[in-house]
Length: 192
Image 1 (cartoon, rainbow, N blue to C red):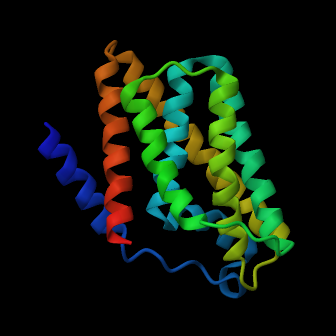
Image 2: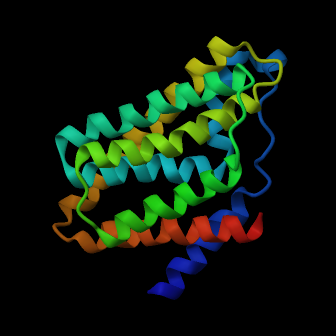
């Protein structure tokens, strides 16, 4: 089973490696560039979906509060980048967020909703800063609205997955998904 998870994670990482080109805002518009931005980075996709899965594992209150904390902190990180405020270790922290959230899902450690919101908020600052650092010629407001909506959609997909895993009546599926996420994060860190 572990071998299959490792192979699947490696295949997923390899399949998305060339997708680092982002939409040109002049050609597609700032909103489209912002909306597509999180969808072109496997690290962003993995952690945003995983945040939703993790929140679903805690229940209704966490399913709203945790993604909201992520989106809010991400907007703050974006604003900090736009204002030229430096944030060290952006890419390493983003990669560590994938590994950390994946491990938290896999280990099923007890977390309060507030504690989980604080943790994902910390990581989201770095994700937002990365988005702001890659703004280019896009209009900041349209770009931000785009990536915020894409992030919320990825969180919703993660919540749906988490709820779906829960319907199996067995936490093993959720834990395996967390382990696969953490493994994919390790592979991305090694490949980078």
